[in-house]
Length: 321
Length: 253
Image (cartoon, rainbow over all chains, first blue to last red; front, side):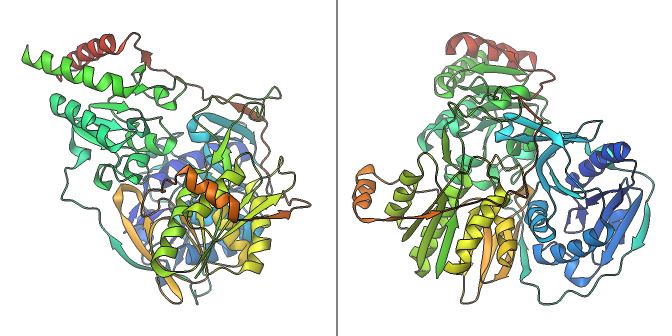
């Protein structure tokens, strides 16, 4: 066993995802407390170039055609061998569509402990996880000898995990992958026919508090008055009340408008991931403990169904006057 | 096609969550449990598949307040077999839960196992990939859309930014459901009551739990907020007035 911190680099369509840099920043802090190195683990095919700006002491690179794009089966097989052989102190995965496909499976396969939803590490090397929709934090010692950790964004800035100097890269031989049970057929790009919410300066966002499809009109009226566009959190899209092109959050768009007016959105970490960087966040929610108030600049504990019509009228009045 | 849906119950986030006196766990005195939202979508997706391609749906849960109601509701939606594990689950975690489910699913031998992609209180990783590994099956999560063929499924896996990956898995397989193709259906209480008279919940006693994957929590706390929102007080009208002046200050009106 060594004291190194491994980071499983996430990339799609030949682009390193931001969570990878966030994890490298987290790994650096953790490595400072363990006294080990930060090791980026890059799996790909002709993808050495992706290592260029990773802030790591070393990059372990595995090159195989089956690793060109992420699939759970191939990644898991390669990583199982690597983790077993190298026995680092910790392996960081994204709490993401890639990392969550493989981290807990590896925990079961290798009988290693797993800590999920880790937001940050303390200076003395404890994990701090964000659970219950961002309402509760849990802290504790990282179990050993090797722990697998899935990281949520928010605890570190991506820039902290980037470097202008390319790290040393070591090619790691791995057995050829055969009989894979999961294969990538194709990518389907997002629909571009709808308005692009990432380019709008003012967004009126609706969440579960909107209650039903008819009430979307209240948000539309307000948006029209403000010269804004309506977007939504996951539950609203899952209900089919808004199209996926308007989805903000982890599996939707990342937006950074001048004003983000969140109506009836609790602010689960998956949503904050998509709008936390907005210039001014204004949140309206009936739950005074809603985590959205922790990122908002202004807030009000109020039913959006009461506020929206009143605000629409006042905005119209202000514009008319 | 045999489809199994193992689910879990989680704290209802609509309620205020408080920390127990020991400081390292949630206070369960007034804690209300509900079905994990993603698991509810997994049940719906299973029923939709049954409606499209035929088959049998088995729903499994551990005993919790409301678990019988949940199972009967699933039956009213179209589930064929209802299984409830009984025992002491107070020290349970997802590793233990996956072991319990895997032991039974080895006997049931479903073609497809659908779980919620995550639950909001997973501290030792989501159940789906654990279960897949204990059963020696492939896993793909963040699934919103499934097409079934004879020996494989093609799923739509969601990535950030709206990108979708179409992935093919050999059956049998475990899938982590992000969203069903339709929102979970509403069932009238009269229909659930009707089902209660005919549907049977099979109980399986669990003697001991394998809690090997437990993550020790030394402290639980509410998020420390750097700067909480400036809260606007008053009735809707007054708050609307304040917001209009804020919009003005921000130069948008």
